[in-house]
Image 1 (cartoon, one colour):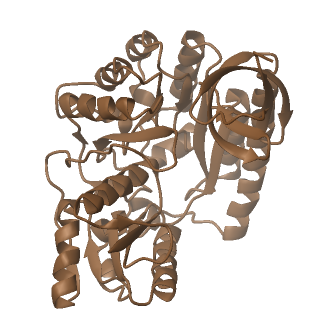
Image 2 (cartoon, one colour):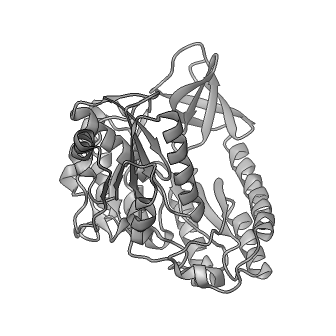
Image 3 (cartoon, rainbow, N blue to C red):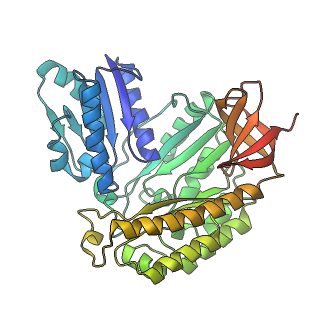
Length: 427
């Protein structure tokens, strides 16, 4: 039987989809990109719009694959089991806790044609998953942590993911060694609350980074999204000792206004965030700071928004994901006063996005003249390859060769839109 997959949401979901596909491949299924007998949909539920997208995706998958078995799994069923169970397009509905039974559930459905809804509570241990390769990718995502204990007032993820659970170091080393043997030069360590890695094992994120950097064949280690307050000076110093660690840090800000951060139940102030950014820049050469910023949070006054806007300009992020607050049923913030109109949220999004684009362009222009090792990933167009520097600057290079998977020195010469342009130093 042929199986295809649709992944919604974050890099953790991408990893989990890959692991599930591997499980099905080992069970005798054939992976495909087109018409399939089984369509796996790995869902996101971070916003109400995410749930809407899940429903749309299910409808489209059913329309395009009318006789296929549709499997819905991931965060949406786990957080909202009753809503997920009501989605009649899905033949099999699983949560985040029992994906090991995926292949058997498909086989059971084939024999009985009885709809299956199986959503179990979160366990206490990290779910065993191994990925050996990522199809058509030059970097590999490796999930090392799951769950979150923070309970930000706007966020449903602790309910979808449970409490913090970490991959044992021995399992991590084994997975990374396999990826290194398969030719992956870069790995990205990911998690739901990545800096919480090891809290349940008596370890820290530094232990995971050191383990990854010690693997032969892997030349770059990159970190996924980070909660900033856990990056103490001691942690930063220990991370800096690992020369394979890429100097790109995605520190989730959400707001540059301390009063807004308090209502969000974030665990730092704007001043503390500024200090962490300063410490990282003082320690890592040519580091890129990227972030997420939410606008229009419940109760965010115009003064608070302007404070956040000024802060974003001051920090001068290399890249910002700007998004408007989405009222999420099941969270405390959904009942907060001061909910604002979509029009106002759109206005604030436009202003913050414009500020972010200015700092993005300034960052890219600052790369001009630098010689950086670029990991080339794909052909962008005829005679042009795209790759990324250690600080995740995208670079386009004109060449008649196939550079896929190679790390080559490039001199950055110009900025074109959202990318830099460079020439191979050998030229």
